[in-house]
Length: 338
Ligand code: KG4
Ligand code: ZN
Figure 1 (spheres, helix red, strand yellow):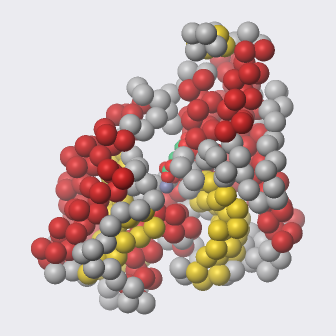
Figure 2 (figure 1 turned 90 degrees about the horizontal axis):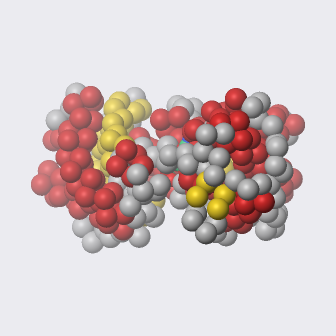
């Protein structure tokens, strides 16, 4: 039996989790900095690293307490070392190195994206090979996943991530950060209809582009006299119905783009046995339903983790740590970020 402590601090969540081989995840704790960044409309790197420093000790202790284990019982410390905000990654990595060194434990650096790619394995067992659509505030990519740790990026965003598009458009119409979950609720109020037909950028078969979408929404707002470019002010803040129509049109547009790329992928990767949908944007029930319908047409399931494993968490880091440890893929104290 191997016990892995996972640590995640790549962006704005300070997280720790414990994974026991043969049992699975036995604790999963997290401090979200969302409230700290809300007033700025996005993550402020300096504030993020300071907050990680403040919370990393207590969150790790909480994860150990919930697992009912002392630190000395841990065999391996698995820590996110890339990609992410450098200052934030450094806090987690230095903390992980310190406890591994003090307790004579092994250490493994984990790629945050590999964490997301395998996050659906925490609760389910997707078959190989499969396609993974990973969509969060920092990334939007398609992977062809052949085995544990064996995956290839087959599509990616050439500019912004999908979550970023939700957050940026939310900011335009005065919705607080993170915009994705609120946009989903607002879209539901008007029945997930497409009112404004925002453009579906087409880069090529498997890649994404979302930066033009934000600009297109901005120009559409200006055209409707809803936004003043000179003062950067949204002019209909009290018009709930209009805001819901913008939210709904945006969600339907992003779901359409995902669906189009997924269909292209499944036409090319005909051996795929399933599709996994992971990352913060995978919390979105409307997009899940749209993608499920497409998967059904190809006779394969859409597999999505529970919300707590879609958004950033340390359970997915501990999980990847467990299969890397089982292959002896350890690092040493020269481990760096990025
Ligand atoms: O995976 P995550 O927690 O952090 C990153 O690695 O970025 O993803 C956060 C992103 C944010 O952009 C947020 O707006 C988006 O996921 N998000 C959603 C929903 N819940 C979170 N987007 C659309 N619909 C949701 N329900
Ligand atoms: Zn993430």
